[in-house]
Length: 375
Image (cartoon, rainbow, N blue to C red):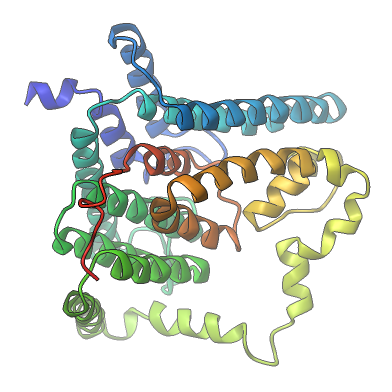
């Protein structure tokens, strides 16, 4: 037991377990961040120096340069507005950099993968039970936020946690039952959140896993268990569980004539690019609202474009491209679901995202026999 607690992967385990528990307003460090920082500092003093591979070094370098640029842009915003909030956003990327460095220096990949699988299953299971048994975070009976501050955060947590667990299970070459558990938890939490983008992302992940790993019979078995669980929930909770029909209504809303596509484009920030003028190249910081602009991008890519311009966005695209070329399978299983969620919300400051990016790089086997999964 002591060896498990003192292992270098244990702070990551605790970080994931504590990630859902928001005790402070959104935009401020939560208990999970504090626990991780303590583990990071402690391990920096006791851990021996380890070799970091070339790809990991490149990703760290590009992300470090990006963070420097965010500090420059956000510092200018602070100087103009005399409000310190924009600088806080840059520190979230520092958390992400620390997370990636911590993962890259962890050479016990098998133990790390095992900790990650246990952590996401335990964390998502607790969150699901809190919602179903106690109605934690009920937003009017049709959407739930759980222990998060809003339902979209719950949906994003489900996507990131599911991808982390799936990539870890692939690395250890675990059987399909482990992936079934992770996928079922992720799908149910996404549905409970009522987030359309979360549901689309988790369904993409399900199809990707089916393509890479599951045999056809396993695909239908997983689908059967998902439908069965949803059916049981309807029987147990009756009319109280309205989030399924609500979610379908929200998805249908996008395809009806009543839906104002132009208004949605403006709401997501797509129609506001001309408002930025020359600042589209340099960015105006993520604290643009403190400069008197009533503009917010509900989209990860646009948030980076508006906040840090083409220059900042270039850093993001460079290391995403490196992942796509050199870790294609993990890119599909991890990064694409996160990007799909990012089409409707800004999730770039989530530290869990950078944990996902880091393991997408390190939990990769070049042995073709190991990765020759049954179709």
